[in-house]
Image 1: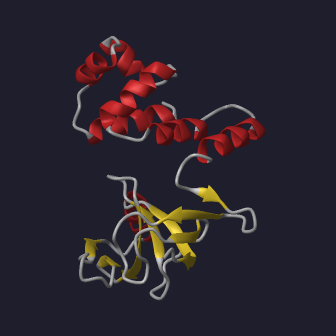
Image 2: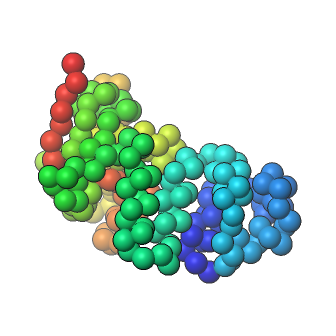
Length: 197
């Protein structure tokens, strides 16, 4: 099973949809749906229907498909650049490994909605003093928070009267912490904030 095929299966299961229902809604046979979740590469029209069905932005599905592509690195890079040009994430040429994102979800008091955050996407090491950018997996909106990791819990701290802090129970394993942060949509450490007035 390819990583992209597994991704499709995960998206289906997240919406509590069975194979038959997805096949019916996307206009394919049940066996074809099973093969798309196993090893067969689904066609473009199917992916358009599937994205709408599981309520995931289409460009995210295409970006995931590119990450599992057997095309040349150069071709993949060109495709990625053309796809990300129209999304909220814009690469910064001056700082490799950094992106600009517009904060679109109410979060930390120091970072109002509409601010532009420069985020180091390669730095996901957690410390108590830094701000971190997240992409809400439910809404695809960006927000920022501080992160506190204790021996038994992970806490996202917003320091805002409008947004309550979030707490998650964790074991003390580093891999579980990384998995939870990835699931929450961690983009990376905020380098700087540009406030728009």
